[in-house]
Image (spheres, rainbow, N blue to C red):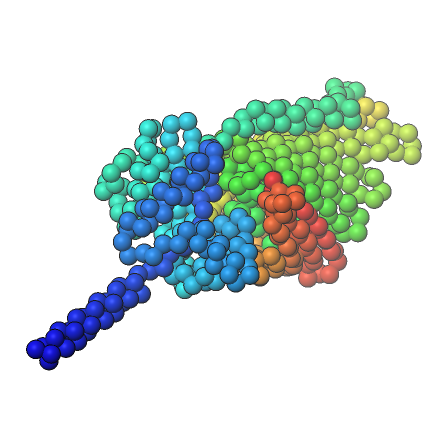
Length: 514
């Protein structure tokens, strides 16, 4: 009897040990996933809390996760005498957080509440491979509950198709934005300022008649090479990339490069740029960019071009706007079209012989397209000076006439290689017989998430002409300044020279997002 009793105890203990081992094995086989709080907009504090709780519940229901919310992650950081980074939304930052607390995967994103619907964007990141496994952005139909949308988003994050979801959804393209009034007032203000400056400087004038030789000026063959100061490359980041900025013009710098880029602006931005060119020119630019609605972006710029001898002063007032087609056709990725209006005022000083200075007032339109071909690749096309008119007036000499600047056609591309490398290219194709081809390429490499190193190269290609190479170098630093000035602050510098070693150009720029 004792032997049988002992055998029973051994049997129970053995099986209990096996059950414990199985439980440990099951627990260890689960994937450790960390959740960062969703970046919430359009609701109160309870909305954000409810969204984060619904996300945790939905991830728990997947079944093969050990889920750790942000509170658990913060506690783990506190045990290591560390602080969780603020506004950790960049995949590299999220990956570092996950690696610190030994997660296998991380989930992060944003959620938005409008009047009668919700929008959410989630990303699932693999910590070991440093890659985004899946990105899902969904917007619910009206009156769908928050929990239902989050549950559907988590399901699609793990392979479910739209037709398999319990609710009807469509792709989410960001929160609703209502800055139309700012767009209208600021755009009208820029145009009005350009007109007032034209009147004050004498560029807008009827003139004092035309001598006979003026007809020959108007009728003579014009070159296809633009001479306007607006064609001078400006802003340090684009300049350091050989001005290959048509497909990357989604910031305040982009106002001067591609108006279609305004629809891709992420934040309200302001930029200041200074250029010291050839030892003679001092050029200054100020630019502003923002979103008017979810689909419409706008930007404005002021550009001053002047030489040390004050022989010619050019002032430009530029306003741009673009519309992004997010859902034009189901199979098309987003693309945008944009236009910018440029009001130009060119003045020369009064000469020593008493002749009055020449005044020029001009109006030009640039047209642009920017298209997304994949998550990493974008392409762009810009038609400058289409059309362009300039009224030249010299009252004392007694003539005035209208002339034009030639059209230029440019194509550009951008390829984001991973998170840290950006490759860019531009091609100018001839519209007139004497216009050259221009080929340019640039590369930007990010180091330590703060430092950017840049280089570019450009060459004009003309028949039977050996042209020089233009080489550009530059660097920049971008800091998170949310607690001080805004979302971030970027400082950029560039140096440009050609292989003839005749000229050099320095650029310094600052850009603020707020």
